[in-house]
Amino acid sequence: MPLLIKNANEIVTMQSSVNGPRTGKAMSELSIIKNGSILVEDDCIIAIGPLAEIQQQFAEQVAQADIVDATGKVVMPGLVDCHTHLVHGGTREHELNMRLSGATYMEIMNAGGGIHYTTTKTREASFDELYEKTVKILNQFLTYGVTTIEAKSGYGLDWETEKKQLEVVKKLQETHEIDLVSTFMGAHAVPSEYKGREDDFVDVVINEMLPKVAELGLAEFNDVFCEKGVFTPEQSRKILLAGKEYGLTPKIHADEIEPYEGAELAAELGAISAEHLLVASDEGIEAMAKAGTIAVLLPGTAFFLRAPFARGRLMIDRGVPVAISTDFNPGSSPTISLPFIQNLACMNMGMTMEEVLVATTINAAYAINRGEKVGSLEVGKKADILLLNVPNYKQLQYFYGMNHTDTVIKAGEVVVKEGVFIR
Ligand code: NIG
Ligand code: FE
Picture 1 (cartoon, rainbow, N blue to C red):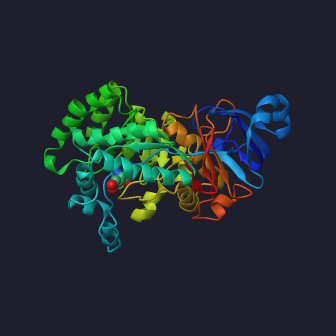
Picture 2: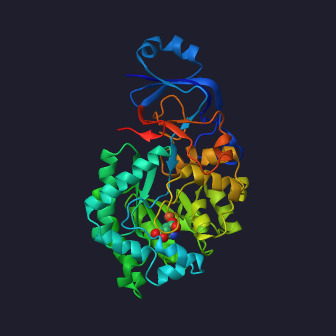
Picture 3: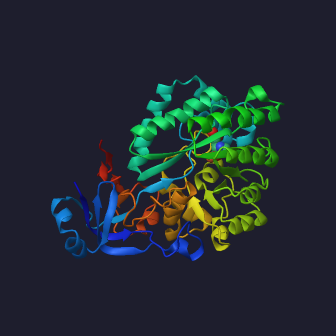
């Protein structure tokens, strides 16, 4: 049955004359249609514009269509969360008071907490436990308007558990409404059993894990935590180049806590994105602009770690394509609210109300190689569409810290109605 979304106050289409990730002024192009309608057939958008025109061109489909009334609402593309550590065991609320009393993220990790704690919990959890837990999280993501999510492994740090995490994602790709994109991150930390033998663990990632990830087709991307005390730029380069040999596209956790030339490395390797970049250098930003590396900025992490925010404004002004994401994980950003992350990006990184919408839709889609399919409302693209309970898009950042999602249409089907997930 076709679906007709009728009479939206504003359709924020994200269409642009620019192809590919948006940079500079193109990051402000929302291409809004007032009083517009959208016709969907199967899982695709087949028409978008004034209702009268659609009726004329597609009379038959319009006559049969289910109607979704968008009067008074904003309609926009489903949000894309392009950086999460989705599948993991346990939670880490006990670390919050430690950090509020002055302990740093790295101190907690070096004392065996942090990523190591979550690794233990993830190793202990069964496949079914991880799967059931993640289904609930994804259902919640959907009610916040998120329709595509990237998911990183990296809480196994041994092959058995890395594989378990990646296979949970694989099963969810088949069963859940949200589209999932898989990233292998075996190099998320050096597991405690390899303490003092860091290079041996790098060899395990390269010679034992990467070939199996590729053979089993468990990931599209390969990510490394390039950070002082975790993996050096040299080790990161080795791991990312090895991944390339197996057809995995490099991503990199770069310059999150201390400047470490991670942005420079991402540009050098032709990584699709460098992520975090809280303390990226001027030279690194320049190199990314030249190479077209997408900056995936994660203001929730700066907020929750009480760290300086990434220089989003400067990056956009220098020509770097910017995406923003939750970084959903149990340690540095335990939130699924991408709308709140948009608010943070406006208030703390100097990004405009328009730029944060581009950064969480089309640019986020390009950061996970989905820009041709989702991230904007255009004929031929997947019908991942939100109806928001606001009369204009500016209220999304103005009424902050709220979830304005009313209806979510995923691949042409209504899956959230009046804010409630309906299966
Ligand atoms: O992106 N920096 C490394 N990884 C995550 C945090 C993981 C954790 O603390 O569990 C991040 O911030
Ligand atoms: Fe992360």
